[in-house]
Amino acid sequence: MKNLKNYKIINKKVLFRADLNVPVVDGVITDISRILSIKSSIRKLILNKNKIFIISHFGRPNGKIVEKFSLNFIIESLKKILEIEKIHFLKNLDTNNIINITSEMQNGEVCLIENIRFQKEEEKNDFKFAENISNLFDVYVNDAFSASHRNHTSITGFAKFIPAIAGDHLLKEINNIDLFLQNSKKPNMAIIGGSKISSKIKLLNNLVEQFSTIAIGGAMANTFLLANQNSIGNSLIEENLIEEALNIKLKSKKFNCKLILPVDVVCGKNINDIKPIHRKIDEISKEEMILDIGKITTKLINEEIINSKMVLWNGPVGAFEKKPYDKATNEIAKTIKLNAKKLNIYTLAGGGDTISAIKQTNSEDGFNYISNAGGAFLEWLEGNESPGVIALKGNKIT
Ligand code: 3PG
Ligand code: MG
Image (cartoon, rainbow, N blue to C red):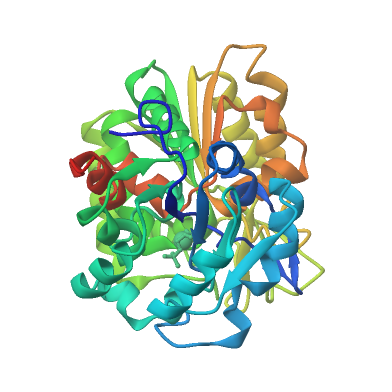
């Protein structure tokens, strides 16, 4: 795979795929790690006097111009974090506009392109569109591992026409996740939570073959509890996945993988309920919702962490975005922080909410690596190379 060390890019027009799909709450960016992650590559390209066109998606505007998804808002943060004085802004990918702005720009300057998902061709991975845009640039750099599981024009399309180079952060992500996968030491443990049940249940199928213990929290645990015939009240559930949950239970026995499911939980009437009730798993009433795992379950998980040689973590174990339902997730982050180095536990975490929990508790130094990817991280763990990485590897144009 070509990268910024083995392939020199000097005085070129560079199409640079970043993932600026940052979390924003009330107009404020709550985590800047995706911006920080492109700094190394961008600074090198600036130093080498390239004209750099940053391309990214933001949200899911579905091929239409939706003002609230404009990337304009991010320019000031980009300038500050990347230490750039001036950033041009290109409103659309009209050929003449690109040509004009390219001639206006000095070497070493940066231009941000408006949300690429405003273009209907992006998600269709339109061949002609990719060719027309590529013709206006010299090289393509992909530094967006976290979006590389999408088979879209800006991830896989340009690589068909111009030299395609892996950015520093993309390389760092795959090297670190691979390192974890290759260094399997038992007993090892995976903690899987979050609310996207259907996309993660596939992952569990794979993990039971590789891990000694899997702790399941978040909304995913509800499906397993219901499969075990526990009543879960009003909790979030995907009923069509119950059979899948039963299959995973069976498979875990076959592979000698211990599943930790909640034995106690914290319930509320809804996510805004500020009077949580602690419940044993057989005490949940009809109108209650499970919003976090309870203290007995948290203790079980924490004890298992301490006895493991490796820990993989993706997804909060409760409705982490609302206090006090962030409690168990924060406890887990703190347990890892306090014990990982001391007990030589190899730890890997990924996913937006998981990063927030780790940052909220200042637990970063308890982790060997924290990926800023969510879906892409999971797919890589399932053993699927991202289409974006396949496109980089397959690119033979120099
Ligand atoms: C992410 O936030 O996981 C990536 O930016 C991909 O976004 P998407 O799920 O909207 O494709
Ligand atoms: Mg995602």
